[in-house]
Amino acid sequence: MGVLKIAAALGVAFVMNAAAIGAASAYDGTKCKAPGDCWEPKPGYPEKVAGSKYDPKHDPKELAKNQSAIAAMEERNKKRAEHFKKTGAFVYDVSKIP
Image (cartoon, rainbow, N blue to C red; front, side, top):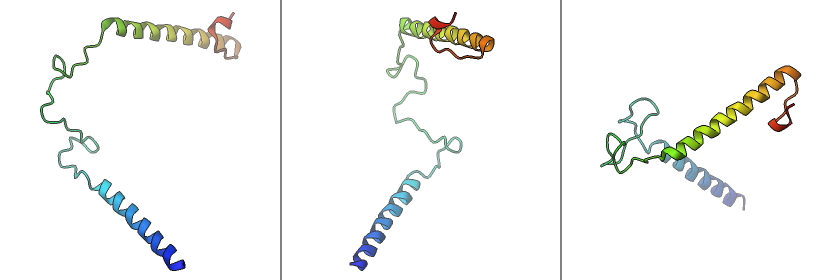
């Protein structure tokens, strides 16, 4: 029984070691622009994305919604910070700030 446990443990260790070595040696890094910057486009991917079929063509109305939401968030944070500086108490709900 003890021999089977040892053999099973060795088998698991061998498989995990082989998986780690395989993952580490999967890419040799010969085409990296910098250490860790090894992304390469697939063949046929354009050099410039704008105007190609990969261009996401963001809707200006949706982008404006995001900008207005960010502006509102910054305004709320400004009110919270001012109230905290005055009183020393943080109030999350801006409507409760006097």
